[in-house]
Image 1 (cartoon, helix red, strand yellow):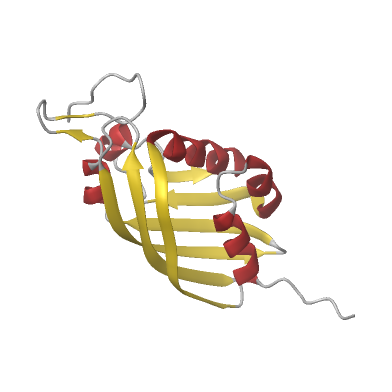
Image 2 (cartoon, rainbow, N blue to C red; image 1 turned 45 degrees about the horizontal axis):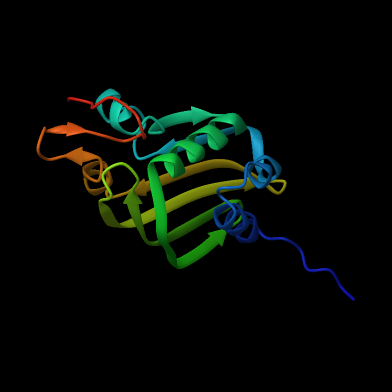
Length: 156
């Protein structure tokens, strides 16, 4: 029986469908991989969502994704389009998260641009409706943001 080659799309999809598993992340992400979440660098947004910005290395992927799931419960993650060429993969879709502290649900479109080399993700850029996702941490009565359980309110 002939073994089918693993494509760059297969690698990225496997990563995304096992995103809460640090062992899978470590097996599919290059040591020096770049992870860009929502922006390149925004200090105020980073106060609310500390995983935002540009981060380098497997530990950044693991740490940042652990923080995401510490603050949100993923209710839906629905890719609608996935395509790739050479080492590049693009994914578009939508997701629904519930903030764990304030119990607020957010629906957002997303886009992911990724690069894969030798079966390892070397670059992943994740974009979403940043205003909507940050708003899921916004405590309207105080005007503060609340993200992590047992954390102090954040005023911007």
